[in-house]
Amino acid sequence: MTENNNRRRPLRASSTPAAPAIKAAATQSIMIKLPNGNRLMPYMIAGITPKNKGVGVTNSNGDMIGFIPETDPALQAQVMDLLEACKNAGKKFVQPDWSFLDEDLDDAVEETGDE
Image (cartoon, rainbow, N blue to C red; front, side, top):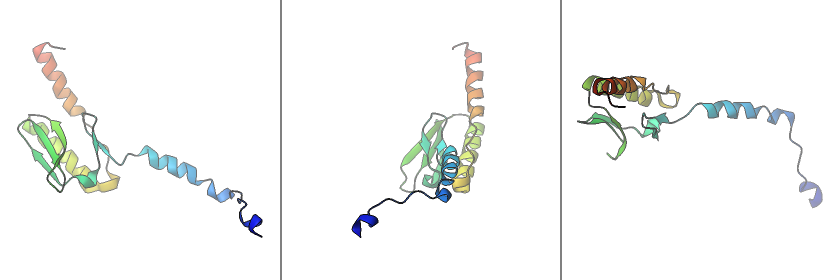
């Protein structure tokens, strides 16, 4: 009798449709991608603070877990708003569009003539 119990049962047809759901879930990231390429999870964010040279992101222990360099106060406010929206949305956040930071960098390069 033990020989019959050790046999593997064939997969049922109903167990195979789970694969597309897994693939679809994998396409949406659960981590916020920062402009410098670093990533962090929204639930880890406890504080978002403007600093002299950028925006700091801290966890509940007060440890710095992210930093976005930006000295312009208006752009710092935009960065803080985007991070706050991600934090409040939890797992359903939309990946932030950081292109406004690149435009600021492009303008600075044009003014100085450096590349």
